Length: 518
Image (cartoon, rainbow, N blue to C red; front, side, top):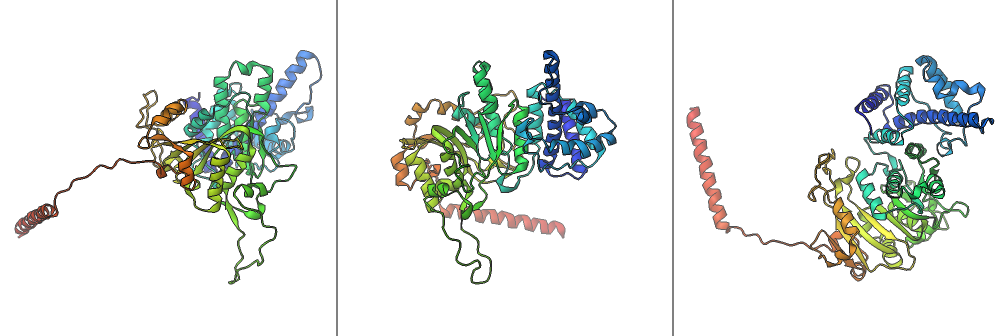
């Protein structure tokens, strides 16, 4: 748990970066991540040295040799700030960019890393803050990084922004991952979904994790994340490592790009949790053919006939929406029997294009669509105001959808404005009016009772036949029924007489005011 002192230190460091000219929050987190990695390398070396001392054997695969002693965290952290600055900038940083194997999950993303700390005093301040953190306590160092990530105050490019942690935890709780699963987020970003899965498994499978085979799977193969942004890969990998995952599989991959026989991934994961980017369109010529096929399309074999239009302007190539492509990708990535929870913009649910209808048809007819949870538009503020929903489905490749559970999430425990302040005080009882999430999880675990609810309720089931009859429309408003109360109004003559009386009163007061002025 973070103390007020550590939070103040982080706030001071953040302010120092800002005033020093490093204003991009992702850049700040990256620079701190590099230093955390440098400290980790020294700790790994110390571990190797202690083992060698106990066994009286040479150090196995040392990270630092004798000539590189000054590059170690424990050596340079107490040096004069200017000396330390020059050493880190000119020697330590170039050294870590050459690493390939040590702590490989992070080091392999270091090739294009840039040292951006502008002055010696700031580097010293950050180094002293990190030195004061008990890195043996994975909860504390994980909380430090989460606090850093919470400071990302604006959306990035390609629709990158942080999914609210309580929404992530709800989605994880619905899928109930186990120690035997293989979990993937194909648009992992800071690895929030993977981190919540780590916490869930740690909480529910403590005994099983004591077994060597489960521990090995947990640290090396259980969690996979893909992203095509090198900055996010570094941040995500560090987030996983600081939460105790020794070798998380965080990889660079343009998940939607054309697949080749040696890179395509198919039916590899049993659980997928994702909030894919949904603010862009992808050039159809760069899309994997199998993903286009899932949208009922084929990849053009020839380029556009003309490179420019009739006015001489460059022609834009045809595109497909990224959110539809990611749904097709997730179906491909899932093993048969695998389950997914995916956030999509509401347009996916009711869009009338052939691609929209085709992907919904595949979810309902070919797979088992379990649930559609409609969320209010304020959930992603201040990043975006778009309305979104969560699709929960199981891959069967043989159908299985008999009915779909709909839930109208109206309150998530936070205000729905840009401030997103908690509505429930810490330690206070949660009421349904302020937070519907406990009700969602309770009803999800008692699905049999949902069949008895009507379409006037906040949650209900809709038969597959009704969905098919409505062109596979999955928007909750298509099926939700509302009770309309009859309103009674006074006759127009009565309302008019009241207005005339009010007008007479106003005229009398104006005359009185005029007399006072005279």
